[in-house]
Amino acid sequence: MKFRKDSFYLWNLCLLIGSIFLAVIGMLKIIRNISEGNPTYDQNAIVSILIGLDIGIASFLWMSMPGIGVVGDERTRKAGAKASLYALLILLGCLLLLGGVESFWMATKDSRLTPFILANIGIFSWGVISYYFLKKGDVE
Image 1: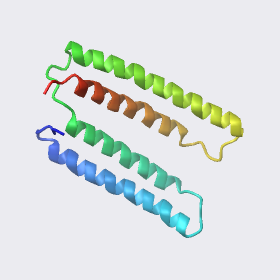
Image 2: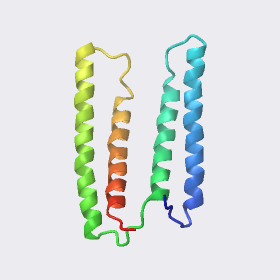
Image 3: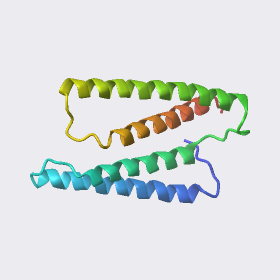
């Protein structure tokens, strides 16, 4: 994998390491609760895992994003439009799936994190898919 070499590379690498550390701390909190015989989850641990994964994915995508030249060229706009369509379809599929699960079980235990999780799915599916389309168009 070819990484970009610019002034923000070291900053993004530190963000990536810190986000992995934050996600691991959240996972260790959940594992500690389970090992103590308390199967309930701590909402702060789940939020720290999600934030750690968000920052980690964003910094990794920023570090490994291919050089695209002019921002407004035709290939970039087509990749963004195609990625937006696929991200919308993924988000609608997740909404249908969550709606079906909630109607099947009629009540969920705690659904306060649902909008946060759906926002993460939408944003990062668009980021990963646009990264794929931009990388696919490069000739090396």
